[in-house]
Length: 209
Image (cartoon, rainbow, N blue to C red; front, side, top):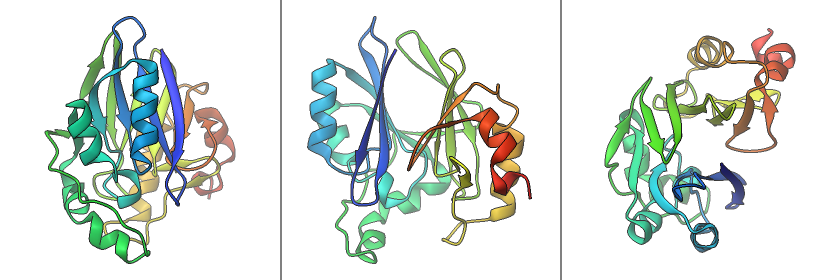
């Protein structure tokens, strides 16, 4: 499987490009900014993008939704609880002195337990509210990969002081949905370095309070 990380935008978002090398079908997760760079990578890898997925609706994770959807024809997927963030991203970004284009409406909504396929690969959607009410993680069991957005970071968790945030809910979601996964599952967060489930279970201070 192709797995590429591109750090985009002034807030350093990890945008992920995943591809099934046999079929050349792929997905893009959290295309936050630097649209031309993301599109160039897609072209270089020769991918037909099936899905654009937002782990949550904050403006720094979805700034290229419209451009990628128009260029690739891919379906846009996000949780219904975060649609207001997507549709009002420009206003939110202005508060930080940044320019972001509002997202189109999602073509379909992510739901807990949903299975998505691209080529021979399968993703399971894990709804993990707390950073936002629509926050989701993406689990590829066969590849031992977990894309966590802003739910879980290396040695940290997502902030919960923004609208829709709930710290207790976030910790419960992480403990109940993510910590049962195998120790060697690689955690790829929305910002910063990767980790593993085993590392976070043992040493993440927010999970061991």
